[in-house]
Image (cartoon, rainbow, N blue to C red; front, side):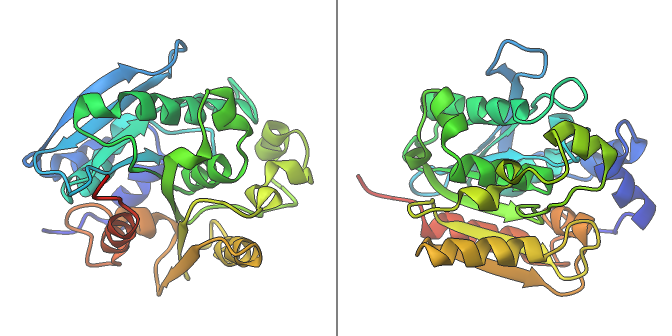
Length: 285
């Protein structure tokens, strides 16, 4: 498949409403799965999620809740057909929720949203052919932060009546997990200050975290790849199971784009994600 120009790929991830989103989505195969759109998981306007159901699920019927990025300020599940199709094409049921964004809300409100979406998935995934025993969380950039914070700080999932024990594993793509001090004025406002350690996933590392794979491109100039290595070092200090993967020459946008059909030769992000899910999926009672 012909690659989209760089300008188009940048628009896909960072410019809401850019017509290139439609261009990319138009190239995504529509066979092998179906999408159930705008399922409510919460009462607020952005409390909706899309469910990508594969025709032929993997043994154990695993499901992944994928949180998109956008600096907690932009993003829409409607732009992530490429990610939903990627996992569904491999037999993995995929849930992509919207969540409230800044400046409508500030930290930690979006964390309660992502926790509620995960808890909803646990309670309802069997209705869509999935297994509540084989749930994973994943995300790119700010979405990776959401996934890792959800797994390390049980406050949010407990508020939704859930447990981190419901998570079989966590996949983080180019995530910020240890990024103080903040310098962006919106982020400082969003997180209530520039040096508040309790806003950082690394602050909550302790024993018993779900298995994780933290992926980053070594050419990422948006989120320091050191976030992944520092987080992994902290997890290993408590004997938690974690793997890091570095992709040569891959940048912040490229690691997510590598999930898309037609771009998977850039880096084996999907292959590595699926291998992780297969390794941690229980296929028997």
